[in-house]
Image 1 (cartoon, one colour):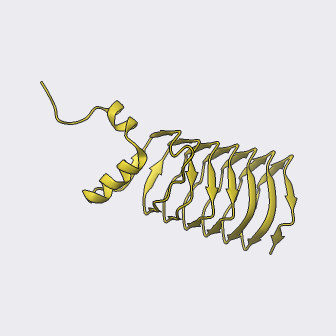
Image 2 (spheres, helix red, strand yellow; image 1 turned 90 degrees about the vertical axis):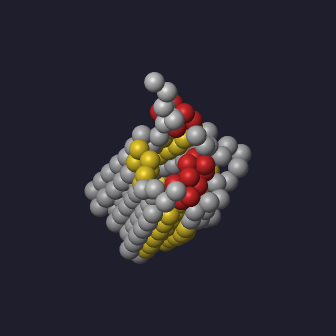
Length: 170
């Protein structure tokens, strides 16, 4: 029996931006679960905003995010060799995420949740972090340089071989 419904392999291979556009076009529930976005936007910047999406337990590899991420739940996801560059990240949930060899450069991060994350070999450079939560986050071989962290929580966070340089804390 033939079905018009695509199989799961076809869905997983679909380009991320096409998936987001299809959700918007058909006004479907904006949610992705257990997706693989391997090497999405390699050499390019992802420039379409992520707004009010649920992208949970997914993998992002070699991705570059340079558009706003607002009110988006990306909890439980893994990021390997990803860059977040000069973007606004507001009221978004990254909790239980794993960040390996990632860079956060010149971002404005406000009211976002990074609790219970694991960050390894992450560089956080010249960002403005306001009212964000890093409760129980583990930092290993990370480097915070420049920028400011205001009214953000680092309660019960663990730091191993992590450096803070020219970061304003208040």
